[in-house]
Image (cartoon, rainbow, N blue to C red; front, side, top):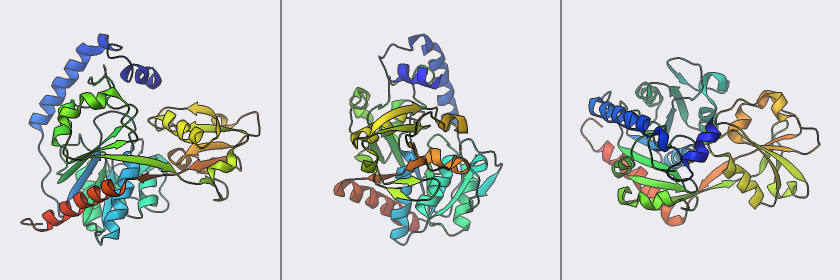
Length: 340
């Protein structure tokens, strides 16, 4: 179903015209919810939202990691919060080294491990924010949460996929939009993941915030799930590799591997899909490469064939400086505010 919808959401504008009446109902519900929304009140640290207007993956998690690392490097201990998609843990949970992805979700584990910052998950993001602040965070960075209106925020960064943009620009279920494009106009920055290829990005230019930045996700060395050994991706050239991706936009992962010269046998799955042993067994000796998000769910399946490929957010010098200035200015203005 997800693949069917994605082909129509990011294809010709009229592909889901029959669903437009439902989209209008959804839009009316969004408008009512916004009018009635009330924040849960001020917190003792500034909150930076990293969110998107569309469903599916856009690159929020690597950007959140980058911001958290930069914050900590500038003597501003960061706390990271997330809903913990797919997790079963109730209430708010601060992650520890033994956290199980089935309880807290796959992305929060990556956030905690890669950022090195205190990380909490919870459906009620305000309580998660209070939990990381209580453990010393001076800046709270929320992975997603743009539509979680109860969470007070001082800075909003919207992330869009350059290849898919905003699709048809229609609201759910006729398109991929969680809220109208006008939501961009209230953001402090728009970060576009990759080159701005999709025409919807040009159509949305009237709503762009003052800062429009480019982020590239750069794959690192492949890491063995069984031993932790690291290998350059180029060492996998010369024979086919199975590429497995249960993320919002699997084709991006496959393209990145292909750009490194790998002969990719692609196996796309739905976002957050829990891979099974049978789905990783192939009747050939070729290695299996997966995303870090998939690897979190496959630690118990580790064998010498399985490798994961981490990615890192990369910016131009000017765009990195712009993001860092936004981060530091948000923290400084909050510290100077009454009660901050």
